[in-house]
Length: 265
Image (tube, rainbow, N blue to C red; front, side, top):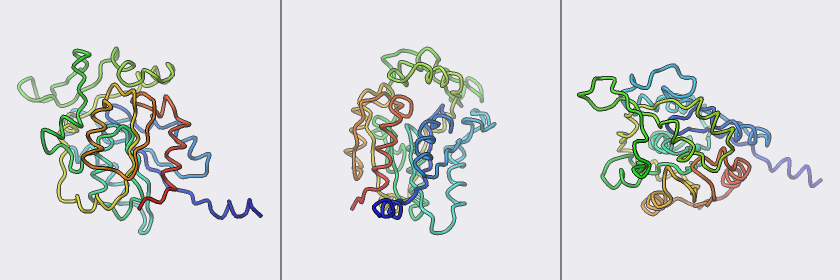
């Protein structure tokens, strides 16, 4: 009898995962396995020029173009269906952008060490809180000037020697090796992401922030600043590097599942 009650109480969720810059849908493979094994539906998207999307990063001229796969996905959802958006790192910009337009289709937004700014990069304070400061490592980026040296760079990538110490220092070495083979340059337009007019809708969506204590990319103090400025319903702390989907996937899966069933008022 008790098993029947538990079976009736279980409600499968639809999780939609949005990667950070350089990554792709592939980075969620451990989370996808764990959540699907628990009976849930999981969609992992490649943003424009990421993962297996064949678009070159240098041809992407706007954040809206970069974010289009998420907007197309949200637009195609059937009426009445709500999803749980999960964004990592700069993927938080995409999640927030979707909250501006599709608040009625989002049950919950979860930010994993993610850029959580109500309207993107609209001020100097936004840039300080949301753009990683990696100056202590030196020259970490490879820049491409698709429009010529007289113009701003069109794409950027994290140099291979800095990938593990900045992104994956607590992750299994085989995962960081795999990532080094799959990471791609990302459009510099991501750093110009700005979206206004939908803040009222965005504020209707409940948010959970997962704070990564040993993060060398989005520093804990930057995460704290974003949390203070736009307080979420809950902050969950993890003692991981920037990529807990590699370094602590089981713990991250449990946190996501718990958040998905919590009744935030």
